[in-house]
Amino acid sequence: QLQLVESGGGLVQPGGSRRVSCSGSGSTLEYYAIGWFRQAPGKEREGVSCISSSGSTISYADSVKGRFTISRDNAKNTVYLQMNNLKPEDTAVYYCAALRYCSASVRNMPPLNWGQGTQVTVSS
Image (cartoon, rainbow, N blue to C red; front, side):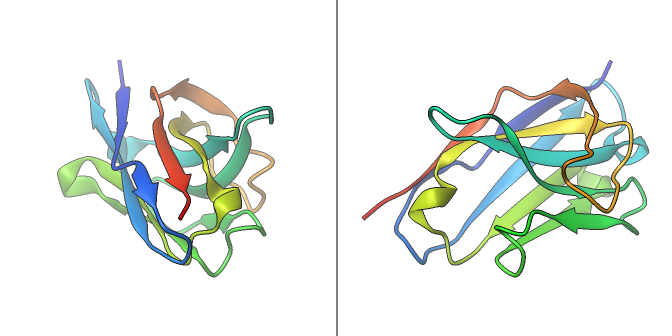
């Protein structure tokens, strides 16, 4: 069974960059669409980005479009989320999930399972 582990979170200054990673074990990640979600304190979990198993479909939330880039390296069994020009409102726990599919809308990202999350804090 696929297990996911996020890493790369930490404290970043506003305007800075951070790359978080989602590594798979127990199964081959390349068979799955993968999504990134985040949950800020007191808020509901929201979809941030997704990438299809082939990489041919990629979607972003409007709030991160142009700043975040999702990619995958199937040889390393890893999906990345490169986050640039970070803002305080990007502060959240970031989760990756295997998805049934990646569609054009990050509001439609049905998860199969979740990682444990990694905290990203944007603050001066």
